[in-house]
Length: 224
Image (cartoon, rainbow, N blue to C red; front, side):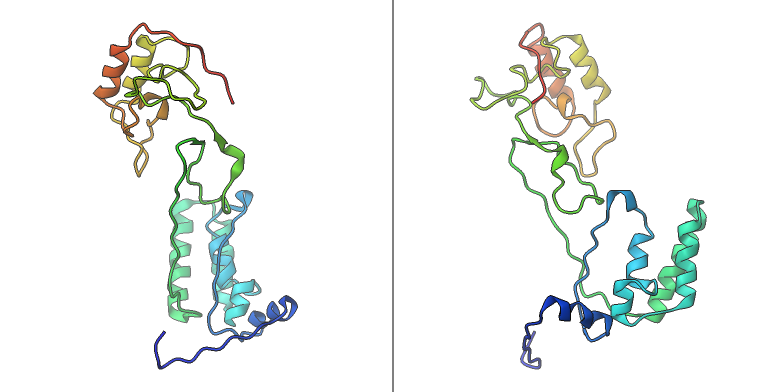
C-alpha cells in the first residue's frame, strides 16, 4: 500500500463476520481450497467461485444461469474432450463476466529432515497428511565409511531390495530404474532404493557401488 490509501480495522465476532461476505460487503477476501480426497475433481474448483448459491459466488454477488448450466454439464460429462470443451466455455464466461479479480495465487515449498520418510506431493491432501509419514533412515549414505548412530533400515545401502545381500538382483533392479531421476518431474521408473549414492538419479555410479560391494551381506530390513 502507499500514501493514497488509508486502512483501519474492525473486530467482529465470528457470527457477525460470517454473514458479511454473504451480504457482498467485502471488497476483497482470501479464498483457500481444501479439497477432500473423495471429492477431488476439477468441478470443485469451479463450483465455489462461480456456481450460484456457493459461498464464494454469493460473496461476490455473482449469479449467472448460463454459468450454472455449464458447470452442471461439465460435472456430468464423462468424456475428457467433451469436458475440456465445456470448461473452456466456463473460463471464457468467467473472463467475460469478471465477478472478481484474482490478486495473487499463493505458492508453497516443502522442507523436511532427512529422517522423514513417505512424503510426496498430493494436491488432494489438506495441509500435512501424516498417515503416510514416519521417522526412519532407510539406509546410510553409500559413501559413508562407518555406519551412523541413528536407526537405519539396512547396514548395506547397496542392498536395494533389502534381502540382506548385495548380488545381481540389486544390479538388475538398478538397471530397471536406469536413467530415472527424482525430478521434478519425477520419472515414472524412479525408485529411491536404487539410488544407492543418494544423488537423486539412477545411473552407472549406482551400479558401480553395488559391484564394489558385491557379495556383502547384512541383517534384513524390517518395517518401523
